[in-house]
Length: 468
Image (tube, rainbow, N blue to C red; front, top):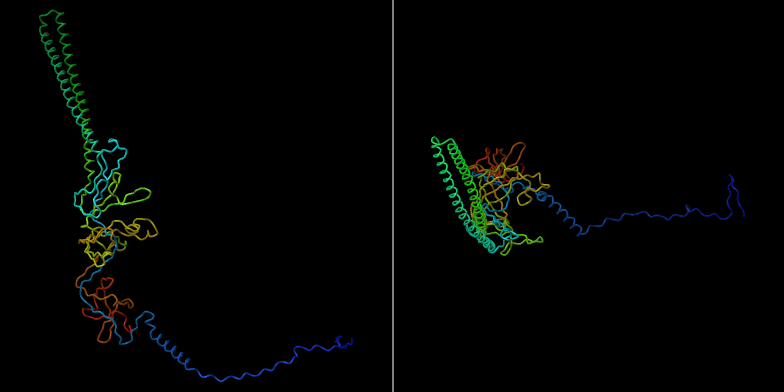
């Protein structure tokens, strides 16, 4: 193989050399010639013009989109007249309709009990019951209970009372006989003593032995008489104790009979007030509750009925502790009902709670929870008009009038606006509005009392005017 030597010891093979890639011929690049612009089509021109028009429309309506009325100059601005009238401020409260006067009817508690009558239980069985929803008068019988066992036992106790009374008469006769016998013995002893004392007076004409015998006889008779007197006194006490014992037995039987007679009267339960009959639910076991009905057994003291006086209804509600100081007993109110939106009845505050509590009546009243920091005061509003639609447990609201001022200059609150530390209104003067400072007094949710700055008949703007 032939080789060719080069300086610095380098050599190359004699074979043909591989051409260098960098020396490959590069393709020629032609210069880019810009194309002439195309003329816009008619469709594209219409689209651009439409977008531009929409942008202009959105810009002009930007105030309406933001919810702020920006009327252009000369546009109509809502106004109101300043009037002189009665200013009224009220406070709203919600509550539930309940009866101011009602009677709770419970199963009677048997004073005589049931065990002495041979009964193992004091439960009572309802035999008669007033119809639910009916209206009863005061004193009417609204419930009756099964009393045959009581009547039988009462007959036995009456017979026992008659027997003990006869025993008292017998004992009294025996004591009278014994007392007469004792008095007879006492009289005989007294006679013996008197005779001995008379014999003792003859001692001067008697011998010494006879005088001594007479003296001893007189002393013996005196001692016998004194002893018999003491025995008679003790017998009187004994006879009185015996008599009192039998009299106590009679009194015990008499009270027993009276208790059962009272029980018998209470089995016919009456109502002290007249009104609507409302039956309560009682437990039937296994966690089941149902409205009471005839044939049910109820324990003494069980509440099974209410009689509600519909002529005396109230709204039982509550107030926030902040507003409680604004309400006073006797303030007027207007009562509205959720079930009857067109029904409005007059009312008056009759009761305000003395203590604040957590929650609200009917919704966790006095129940601890996360709302304990919200304190409320109980309130009762008497409804001063009757309506057959008003029944207990209806939801209602009341507007309590807490401030009422006659002949006041009134302006809508929406006409007032704050400007720095003062209140101003815009008053119409011809076709223009003039800003005017005012001084206000009491305010309600809708109106304010004007003390100075406006007079009756002035026309004020109800929204900000251009340039205000």
